[in-house]
Length: 511
Image 1 (cartoon, rainbow, N blue to C red):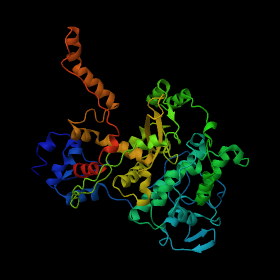
Image 2 (image 1 turned 90 degrees about the vertical axis):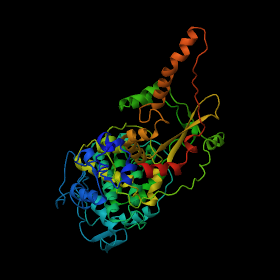
Image 3 (image 1 turned 90 degrees about the horizontal axis):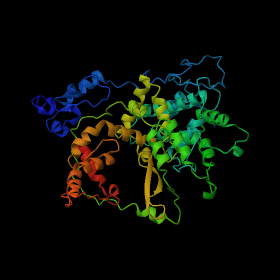
Image 4 (image 1 turned 180 degrees about the vertical axis):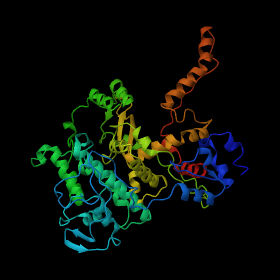
């Protein structure tokens, strides 16, 4: 109690409190972003007091309660569809979670009576993804889909753009519904299984694959000559129906046949003005200005410069063999802040990840501005924040799409590598950086400057120049030598030479 009443907590804002001192004193604190207590009231003298607080203010909701409601829309459907509903009708809005229709589960091989507890993922798919008006006699392919997702393909698609901008009205609502239901499936499957679980019947890893690949599967830009007379809207409608039926293997095979600009010579020249206008149309004015004023010369990576690309990546930092931190007595942590708010502040039409996954769908879902949707997103990213992602799905937080820009167009060997991570990784990394920016800045001072400041490098450079300007210009005006000098250093491969082991150790012990 003396520690809680000391200067560490009475005179310092909670985000800047050195939590390592709290840990040494046995102090715990609530990290829930929706905690109703004031920030200075979230510290507790013991772990038991924190757990009691969690039981009172943050009870864990059972996975199948009404907590997992769906986003609002123009039309709603009852939990149990009327018997007169048309089987061909597609719901344009996300329905409330439904209990599986019956214990009899249909597969391509025929009717099989199964216990939902024996294959919980199959029951979950029939609960969440089957259309509310579906005919129970229609075959479902979700068992085959789950087997496919047990060891899926991770080959990136042969295209970089998709049909997201072609989503209209009810297809848009249906696409949002499917995406939102996948997030719910991850939350539910994660609540009942261990992250180390690799059984396709219960593991959440397959649902992560679906989440990352949904745009890849539904919005692959099939050429008009390969659509058998279907329009774009008809193709999207058919693919959504296939997804509802569990025909994931067929959707993946169809998307694998789509390829954009097979021959480099067939690719049209980039129109910088159109790129700038597209960014401006989506209120991303910084990118619009950069594209209009300084269009980046994109390098074509091939046999002539592949060696230069590989030279950009140095060998990893040698192991430091640090003593692992003692985390046995640590308290539980949860995602701080409100991630739905962070997502709503993100910019649209940014670069896509390896599997053409984009931020746009998350932004559109978050803009429902519905408490149930916000809670679902918070629960999902809380799993990511706490490291409760199944091992097979962790690759989606490591993979990046690589392209290069010319530093000097006259010298093709001088390249600047740009990595575009998955949407999941960008969202959680951006949110954590925003929430902890003051804490990170306090820890990094005085060695790092302008941490957490927009365009921090430019800000730091200008401040440094202004601070020494009088020591240079005034002597020069008197024909004297300056008494100060500024030295700029550009360290080659600096970020690749930083020890990841040391970074993880600092995060584990300090934050």
